[in-house]
Image (cartoon, rainbow, N blue to C red):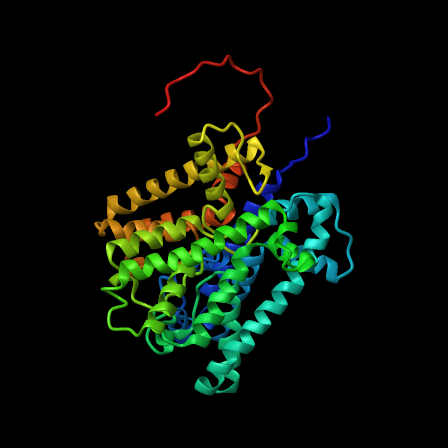
Amino acid sequence: MKKKSLSLAPNQVIALGFLAIIVSGALLLMLPFANRAGRGLSFLDSLFTATSATCVTGLVVADTWTQFNLLGQIILLALIQVGGLGYMTMMLQASLFLGRKIGLKQRSLMMESVSAERLSDVLALLRYILRGTIAIESVGAVLLAVRFIPELGLARGIWYSIFHSVSAFCNAGFDLMGFREPYSSLTHYVFDPLVNLTVTALILLGGLGFLVWRDIWEKGLRFRLYSLHSKLILTASAILVVGGAVLFWWAERGNLLAGMAPGQQVLVSLFQAVSPRTAGFNTVDLAALTSGGGLLTIVLMFIGAGPGSTGGGVKITTVVVCLLTLFSYIRGRQEVGAFNRRLDEEQIHRSAAAVTLYFALAVGGGFLLLAVQPFPLQDALFEVFSAMSTVGLSTGITRDLIPFNRAILIIMMYCGRIGSLSMMMALAARQAPRLKDPVEHITIG
């Protein structure tokens, strides 16, 4: 009798692939010669760091520069690049480079990985991703080198420029500024326009998503010719950047921004409106945020970046679809849409499910964290949403977490990068189609 072959769904393959990379990265980071003074991290701390890098989060239990030597930093950067672009993207790029044929199964995996709509899009999208990534990260590194080389010397300045360009574009938030002060991120450059604007641009470009890149590349600035997906991402991103900066200024004008010149306030507000979606760099002390500033940052972390991008969060389009659905119901309309296009009903259901599941996991994770360690509520929520949205911002409690809570955040970072809904679908057993149950109405609201 013929044995049944094990067949995995695309989201299951992607979930297992990321898991394999995380475990491999953790084992490499444990090696004594990847750590300064030969003192390796424990397996749990190495697993936390590898998960944070592969899931492009940025939460750390040990300062990157203080803990890791050049080899350890290179391992981290490789995990960040693979995690940012998706391991399927990297594997297929290698296959193309070696001249191997890409079959239907590999294309379907790639389609799931970068949220492409059609199998025919995959190869073209691969080329856009490869060329776009190399070009953007290279330009970012050159701009950062203008600042870092005079400060750090040629070799070190080039390495710092490359590392921070890749980390920013992949929305990872890892930095090497611990030589100034551990866990200081980019606070030393709080008023530096070159570093701030370069990192901000890299974060935004990485967070738009590869499908939006293609529209811009092929159609230039003719916005009316863009797909509905690109129109929604670009419009919502502009609102979030401008609105987020204004609201951050409003919340922190008498606190963090007090005493700064107007131009400095604009620079800080802009950076802190962009970084929570979902980069993890900070130029100010996040532990000193007002309650309003902290809540705004949590909301921005929740929204995140675009689908098929290097960023995390529940995704911009998910939130936009939920808001459009709300406005349609308020106005008494049956159809949900924008820009003279109607949305598919399945997308509406998927968005509602994604938001519900995201909040359920975040609240559950927050309860578990607080049940064993009595942190302030805002700090705990900040940490949980940062992990779930793969942001990496923290008020400073990450390194104080006990092993149980570190394990909770590892799971949350992993689910956040794979996508909480995709993760549940990957774990769920497939069920045979069944007859529909009778309809019965209930009272809502």
